[in-house]
Image (cartoon, rainbow, N blue to C red):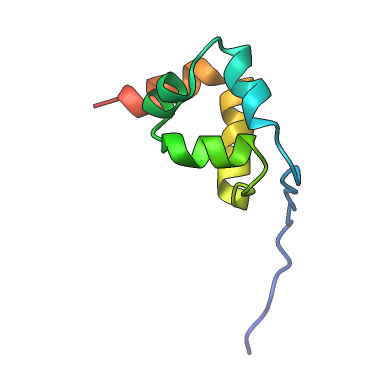
Length: 80
């Protein structure tokens, strides 16, 4: 007989929209600098900022981490 257990589940909801321009400008970076620092494409940043495209859910989550913990993101991206 197989027994089943219930595991606690936490649902994380990503903020539906993020203001990429405000996040970038809050760090005092140009689009090029922001793209280079965080591994993004300049064109994508431009499209998001001008409202022609919306970042995918994973990118929106990444933007929130960049906004709230930019030093941790830089450390993670530069770790060997």
